[in-house]
Length: 221
Image (cartoon, rainbow, N blue to C red):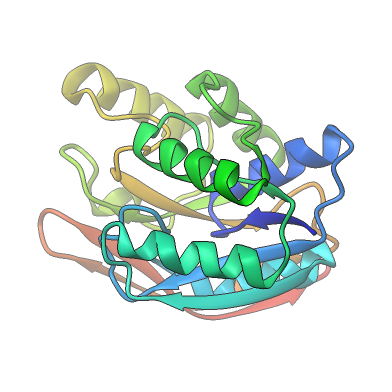
């Protein structure tokens, strides 16, 4: 089984597309639903709406729950991979050695081919491609300089410039690999339909914020 660890965010979605360009036909999307919003491994905000993305992609999709406890959550992922007889796993890892080392180690043990098309990608290269061909929005912020004005905003040229400024000023990772922010993809080249957010809410405590999608549907492009 060829699978993608799919959060619905910019990295896993772009990695899926890159795998497609490499001739890898991903058959299954795996979304881990973490009970811990500070999970070291898995995406948190709006993960349940990956179901719409899977429909737009025409891919089989499964949800698995995890408490999101450090290290223990890896056992949950291992179980998922074994249950689905995964032989090839695509992930959206970019720079996180913590995540990459653990998935690589697990892949070796389970004799799984781990493919990370975005590993050490130039941040500007990724962001420019997203701005040009994808509709990806920022759904959470948690870093100095990232405030409530970023919530729900599409990653476009203006946002890229703002991130570049914050990178110089505060040293934030422009791809959010350090947990600075989270994202969600509403449209992508392989989507047959796009996602329309019907209802959403913003929360901001002065330090962190979340753009929570409450209702969404698929629409024709």
